Length: 114
Length: 112
Image (cartoon, rainbow over all chains, first blue to last red; front, side, top):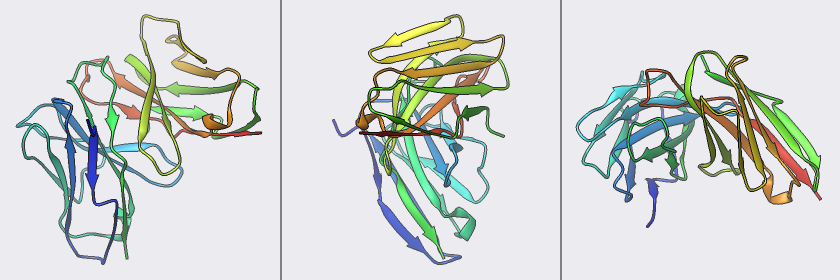
């Protein structure tokens, strides 16, 4: 099992460009999450999908959109990138929304917006 | 705002010593989890402690939870160089089981 995979690993964008970060998991998990991590800070939740067909805003959703394409895949889109979106983005999944479940993380996408 | 705040922000110890890091949070929780992040990598789950538990062990890890003080501690005994990483606590608030809120992390450096 690959676990949680993310593409790309690195990306440089110019201000105003758009891009989609891809995330896939092969653990048959129902819930998936997108976080951003800025230097010296913890993870902040951008969007999440408690189950296939549902998405909800997290703590910092502005400037982002998401799509839960199917049970395996959860993508994050930046429509018009801004320097403030320079960050490392992590996707995570867990079996369901029960609070006793741990989250499994992908390796991250390092995004720089110039 | 962050639900969890870790203390200290950074900790440097020698191999073989014990490392203790603390987490404080603001609201009632269902449980608290600790994660480790090696440099440039994703987070890895270490241990979960439920709100009705006071202490839990897993190998060299010992976690305590004091819900009256809204705080938790993670103790790593007999530290190894491979324990060098950042450690984060994560909580989910009562009534919001769908998502975790992460603290700012403690950077642990274990030297030989």
